[in-house]
Length: 226
Image (cartoon, rainbow, N blue to C red; front, side, top):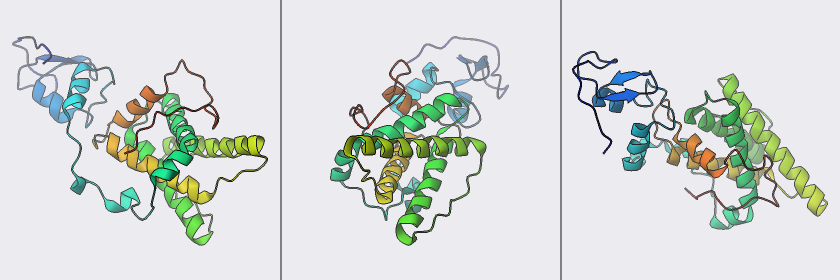
């Protein structure tokens, strides 16, 4: 349990209860109840906040009834064999998300998941009907995420051609990889509007000091199957 100081001053949020902890999101002191209720809801909690970290350690996985089955693309089957054979693709696309999140620190989990979901819908349409119609994205931030992911798909195909003389990456493979990451994102995020738990998970997989390019030949195994 983190230490809390006694004080006669009131919480900077509710102005009713006593303040007992410093909130780095508002640079002021708040009560534990407001901290718990507003964390990642109205508060942009920094990842190094000790109360956020403590909450994540004790947070239980979200129950299945909180997930929209359509949002998880359950019609797309992803086998263990696929995750093994396309591990480097999954790593490359994960790194693309990591890169996008580093470029825009205002991104949250919902932005990443929304961009991945729209791309999954696009690729599913291509696979099933051959139509190249892109699902519209709702923000410039999501466009930036999608652009990073598409660039990594392009780089992956180019790396295959350089190594094999051709690329055998199919759109159906890209679809499965995107859906894998959608499910991983839903499994990692807290579900709160301003959650960055999924983003922090990606940051942990790719420390900034490491090389900026993750090629199919160089990637290691870090992604945990959801």
